[in-house]
Image (cartoon, rainbow, N blue to C red; front, side):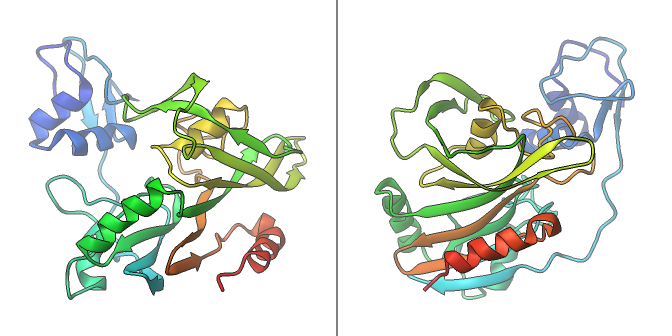
Length: 286
């Protein structure tokens, strides 16, 4: 596709020329499928007159991913989302997503998702089985009664726990900004504890950590860890040095608990398998 006007944002041009919603157009750019003169550009890139925009083909359709229902209770269900699957349905419909699978998983209807994971993050997503439960979830979260625990592999050896309190500005949706001051909301903090470290033959050090949050902001764990000097392996958005295309983001929501429900699931990270197994055994869902 061409560009005659110039000065327009890439996502706006994609939306206009492809007949997409702006959100779907942004995703094309974020996924690296929108090339400007052969180079992937972000959604906000301002096109110059005469620049050519090429859209890479979408991946070939695959069998819909299997969504596992890990547990039910208290009006909620814990679902296991694989990495690479969108949580929310794409604007305009179509395409695989966890949200699109709700009707099949809960044919009686009324189920809604109450939290989200980024496409490349794996692990637990909660569904409220009716509107009353969805309302109750917000109250439980505001009261600090929802405990969410993530596993992540970060750069460098981390020897001591971290308490990350800095406020997050979510005004720019594609990439949030960590501000200098602490968050005024005491629930929007990230508690990080190291679980085990490894050093590769290249001398690079990595640490498996557990990041624990009660009420998360968009990209909170990813942005907090990067700002603290420990970006997550495979995180292209927040500065992981090996975030090459195809490299998986090492972030997994492994455990959630709230009144009436507890669920857990492990990621398939072979290099830390023994440590992860120990952590799960030490923190069972009763």
